[in-house]
Image (cartoon, rainbow, N blue to C red; front, side, top):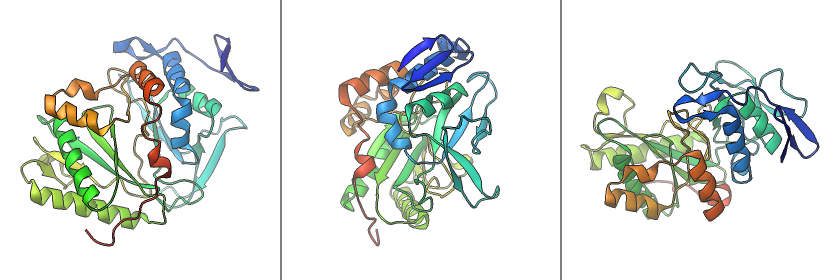
Amino acid sequence: MSVATPTQIRIGRRVLPVSNIDKLLYPAADFTKGDVIHYYLRVANVLLPHLKNRPLTLKRYPNGTASLYFYEKRCPIHRPGWMTTTEVKGGKAGAINFCVVNDAISLAWIANLASIELHPLLSRAPKVHQPTMMVFDFDPGPPAGVIQAATVALRVRDFLARLGLQSFPKTSGGKGIHLAVPLNTTVSFDDTKSFSRAIAQTLERQFPDKVVSNMSKALRKNKVFVDWSQNDEHKTTACVYSLRARDLPTVSAPIRWKELEDAVKKNDPDSLTFQAHEVIDRVSEHGDLFAPVLKLKQKLPTHL
């Protein structure tokens, strides 16, 4: 990758015009659209395998994270001819042609649209009815925070381990923790949704003062909502390595279990927040901590 001019990016034989690269997308951090594009290209080698063949919903912030945003499922009609798309049928909107980001030039084009956040489906085309993983989102209700979310994530890890399932954590880029359970076997969304819901409800019965499985926000005060509902054919989860639209350019970053344990032990929430430059450094040091999610084959038990 090389910059041909201040308004172009050359990747291989393709030249991508880019616009407004000095525009502040994170005003509080002096982080521009050019910085967003630069970040995504720096982590492309670890990010792209997690986006491969996944229908992608864009979350666009044309005037930055402090302004209005919009979701865009249908791949923009002004897309380049080389941009890959895939049709997904079903849902209220009928058939939708989603963008698919399989290479660095496509990733740069998406970033140039100010799509700060990347939200892929949990399935890959053409088998869009078959999730490759089961996910949990541990969402703390104030005054609970990321340490409480991490504590619950560790309990779910142990619960899953007793069932013979490995799981892999990542930060949400905010106050939560995400957990991925790779499957990569024949399974349905009905299977993963009912299974994850049963785990959330079981945990709620065991720790009623700390965990809630009901989506009602009124029930979440100082508890961690174990969100199982993301295991749905038409829902998306922020991709690993995706920037998040906060005040600072935080990232949904993969993390080792030991790091999560240490953060809880030391009550150190700051150790569970990673900005773009830190993630670039972590990738250089550790590679892709989420790589097992791509290939590890596991089957859901027939019962809890």
